[in-house]
Length: 117
Image 1: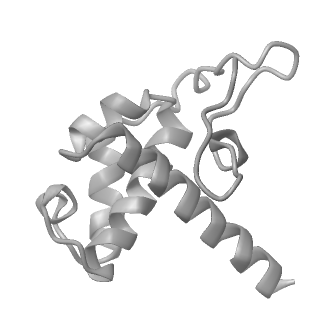
Image 2: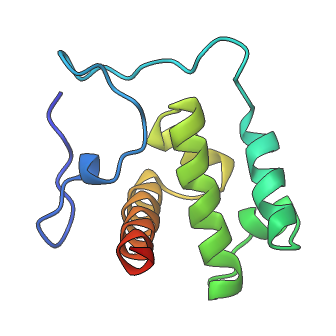
């Protein structure tokens, strides 16, 4: 699989949370019995920020909404391995917005790890 190029010289796979087979790079399905739906994950994230899922799916662009939305997109990609397009449709967004969310949230998590150390 050839990774998608994204701005600033990073590759989408730098922050792609989907577990992949080390030999061939194909996405690995979640373990049996651990599957959660997109709605369940989005609901959990929305509740943790005291928002509604409709707020995450809405057109608002402030940090109040965009950070939880990016976290939800990241969590959905990590736990379900759904395609970027499918995740984007759930949030009424384009797949490129999901790519941006994965990169942004992944970078935010990476910086927080360095700060915590």
